[in-house]
Image 1 (cartoon, helix red, strand yellow):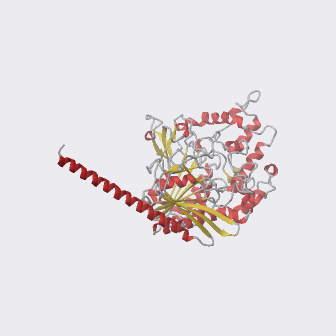
Image 2 (cartoon, rainbow, N blue to C red):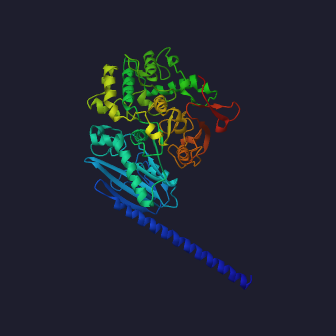
Image 3 (tube, rainbow, N blue to C red):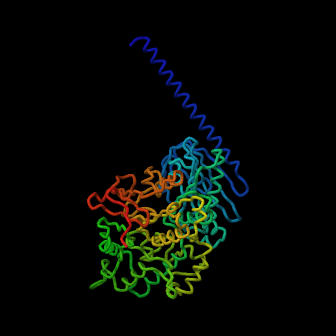
Length: 563
């Protein structure tokens, strides 16, 4: 090699080194500017809003389910609490972490957080995320998921103080006897999270977000309903998953199921019988879609009859006493006012039997749901703390039920006139799992249909609903159950990701059609995918082409079901 070529290589190496040094200096300068802007957000503090802002420039993870962690861990710096949904998600992105304490009234203390990606990574949108059960803790998993996708993302504990002194049971709704905490839960916590987050976004980036989106399931779906109905200008697009609405109706249905379960000494259906019931449901209904795969595609077409399970001799776990058959018919049937025939609540749909909450809805246990025989959820706010499940055995399903529904009206988010939201261009996606016993999905469809009547001809331009076969409450189940409804960043294709489908609808005007869901081995997204299937826009269902693999979405098309 000549001296000339050696000198030339030296120049190139020197130039590369200078370039790298300049790039590193630029990054350091950008980080320093971001850290400075982040620190300045604390100046937004005032009497009713206290702010702490920290620039995070090292990898962090949420606390694991067993409270262990790897690397830096994240909890709220004041409460020290983590959300129940956090399972060790991590991020190595730099971001501005803003912790907010909101004090809208004496005794109303709400905590929220806003996570802001660096300007170069921000997608220009803000993402509000929901909570679960009786809330009471910031959920960090959605914050990390949203940050990964480039959103300025926010979450709140809703100010219910679940798990704090006096409210130790995280499933308890006793906080609702305090009117300030009840207002936090019903509407105020999620709304103030949103308005304060928008203040923070403008302060950090020097401009407002281009669009605002919200995603929530269960209680988060109820929070979506509150925003949709009470504050239609807060968001441009909303995902309302398995929504916690019709709470009083649901509480009455659970009371009805309890009364049926103890009508006679032989009426109770224990958890040990649920596998046999599930097997009979599949025997009667699995193949109705011409695909025998352990999933009921369209429970509306399944007319489940438990009578074939009647014991022929001695009672075992594999059969039912005649009184238990009667119990199941009542639980799978609809609850109606006995005098007027008016619907109070739709009963369970077939296919829910192996979900945890089936032990609540069918076997009257106290696990898996905040609304169960011993813990009546928000309905207790109008029943009073002295009311017990046994009182349903002598309940007046006309007079008392009507009185309770009327009393609860001010606390519910059941109003179906959503025109103030859709008339300004708002986009709503509702979804639920057909295998969800927590909030039986005929009731979710009921809300969608009634809201659609208000919206009228513009419904196709502003509303979608997806009912996912074989999916339990918000996640899990025997069917393909991952489609961006909570693991927002796993698959970044709008055709496979409900959140990104909404984003595309809001920002580009491309309405979502079918969404491809994925089933992973052991329902673990870190393992291999074993099945894909389209989830169709309601009321369509997926129909197999009769020749392709039933484990591949391309073998199915979305069609209207037979009448």
